[in-house]
Image 1 (cartoon, rainbow, N blue to C red):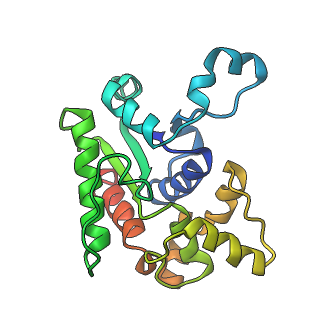
Image 2 (cartoon, rainbow, N blue to C red):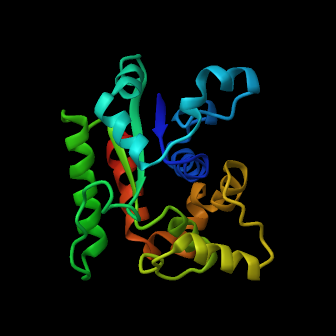
Length: 216
């Protein structure tokens, strides 16, 4: 089995890769970066530069055009595509935030999933893994270093940076560093010991989705 990832950035993909590897025991070679693709040398960049970056608008475009998604899923044993998007810009991509309540994260995630499905224009939900981070995927990493509810933070990236600075830990937002920072999310023992999934409902929702759809 192989799983493709369409994410907003390389650092986001690193977090998702750790989660997938921990839950599925897949090798890193079986988790494929569809957008943005891995960093390329200068020759390749000249020909494929459009694929080396991503934003929420690019995620939307990929879902609407489905070239990468359909191409990946058409190959045998390539069964799932992760679509990652943060909700920090939800207003910009057409999702009206629900009223703040005890179900805010669940309700907002559901609205974003519905919006993604409208972009896809076809029910692909059995093959799509929705990595909806509220409000940014940095909030998922915050569960490791703060060990408290991280869903209420308005700017989790900034908060994570401050917390890591106090601990003298590198907070650079790139693939290699975020792969290192989010490593505990690949280890079931650490997740259970520190109750990491209790601190972020959107993180827990992604874990549960992968378990239900991917794990036999």
